[in-house]
Length: 401
Image: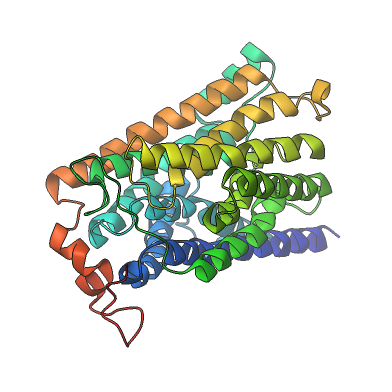
């Protein structure tokens, strides 16, 4: 029976890893549909190569920093317990690799290719696992201090802060250091539209992410024994709330509508195992409206050229989710309890601070020593032809609108 349980857990977490790996196809097509036609190939190549760079970084460095575990053992040792530790690494790798995938959407259309690949390696090797280890492995005693001081540890069941907020705030640092795309804003303050190239691809990416997210959230239990239908229901309700709020706030705009479910799912990750479904519906709805409002404000008034809106979607909605878990996870709001609002607030702020500092260090160093931005001429030509020497379709030069 022990062998059967172990084998079942291995299969369970392996299926979770596969679902979250599939989410990276969602990141790819969401970006492909949002960027202009002359940058579609670059979006596809970035996501898969960033994943591979992340794998090497996490295997050799990041996982050791986060969990103190390395893989310098014979295969017979690594394969013990049906290889559970190996598939656990695979599952957590797909989370780690989501950070560069998130950043990719914000810096689209004007980032150099190899410096971005290097940034992905450095982030997954050092920045992300530093905070991951603090939250999910109790490193540096931070969780123990929060529990002794406020009665509960910082709770982030599936990564509203650890994954999404960290990715979103690193993305903001990268976007600010890169500057806006060539031709996006005029010197006279006029904003020039760069509309999405393919709404069906954008929608396909959103759907892939939405479906995969149930592996992201539910299988964060990491064992069959720990699985909870409450996580699935809360994820569903937050997705619905985010979609409907974005529909109304975004005035039927399909880009907002298809990012709405993602906003809701980002926000519910942290407290999906402790909140009531009605609380999740509200948390998701707030996230959907927050994304629309802040995306519009950042793009139109603050002139922050975050192409896919990764800062409002992941950074701000993730932060909202971390704090919301400290409210709607309380028994007074129908939650499971065992949550401290102050621990949630401190953990959320800490994640933001580490992400911003790490993002500015990594991208600032690369900007200083090798450069991170394509020239105006290269941007005009498009990243597809400039970097990859081919366009998305054989019958065009990939220039797009």
